Length: 562
Image (cartoon, rainbow, N blue to C red; front, side, top):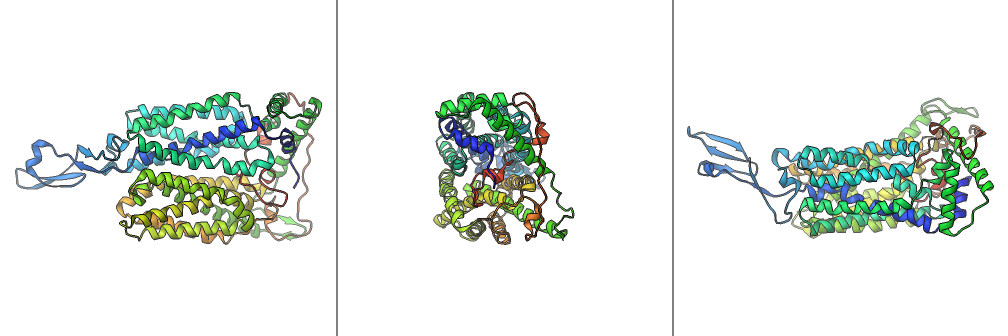
């Protein structure tokens, strides 16, 4: 596989203070996500309550439950009345959204809505992230979204209307973009991308543990929300010293700006760059390389069209091949998000201590993430991914039938399931990026990501609404879905040591002269001023997935971001 000229330039820059600034900032960004993503676990939990019966009616009450009471009328008939006042248990939480806005009884579904509406906002994230980052640049998108995230995070703590809180939560989910992570990888030296891809994911696990610890010490929901909002301000000082992605600047034709960024990086890293004239020529070549790649990629024949190469008519075989990959990968993404998020939100079901549960749940993610790299390098992608799905599915399915009074076993199996699904999550990013051909990789991963966001949106209703009606059903749903995903994954091909497919035709058995010739384009522009149409080059985080994520032998690093 041909090396990218920009990757060669990053190798010349090496790794130093400049790269560390981006890596640490993107890691800190990832650290702040769990308190927002898992906000409902502690801000809108299930809270025990009793019905507060009006004093003037207490003598006439025949019976009562948590949400209503029955009185005997003057005519001697029984009449059921809903509870208008509730007494909430404050032994675990002093105040919550649940108690302040009475999110119980007929309003119980609003607890799930508080969590689910954030996930609904993330439906927009992939669309916004790709378009805005390609159109306006990575840095400005990061800056604006971080400002919005800080404002919305603080605003929730001061709002007194629940509808307004839901609107702000939706906005917060909509700006939860991966642009910061993309920028961190774009300035990373190629040989370190695998390590960076793994290490940048670990702050999520640490953030999950810190969220559980913060909630343990701060039991008032407003003060808790403020406490996790303050750290969002600390990302702005390092952002002040950061620059736009030099890769994006070069592609867009801003060569003089890119030159200044590269010279700054060389000073910080104490390395020597080629001469200015050589850099300008190199940037021209890089821009040309990107345009040629995009034309060769976007000019491919679309899925479902009849393609003939070397006298071989693939026809429906191609359609079936890519459709099978897409269907199974979509199922895998749906399953991994459903189960992963479901386990995060099930602390009150699998443990009597929701704080300890989330802390240990985050802790088991650490080996789940860090052990995947050596595992898939040794054993391939398909089998380890499928085994993790199956292991998680079996243990979580068992939880539906184990008596809750055997608390130690329930707690242990829940953590085993979380460990296994964390491994699946990390491996799936690598595996799915290698399964899709280059010409449809962005579309394939995009569709799969939508399925993942769909699962994240419905999972609060499974844990909150369905679990309240049938306590064992969420475990069975999570277990069955994970098992189905594991079995389906075994149908896919192994990708370890196999070159990434460039076109859909590459999914079929090789035939002589089946490859189309590549298009060459001469980019005529001034390296310093001319612009390249953003739609023509349309760079995204996956523009060079076959170069950024794959070694010479075809093995991928853990750097793919959906």
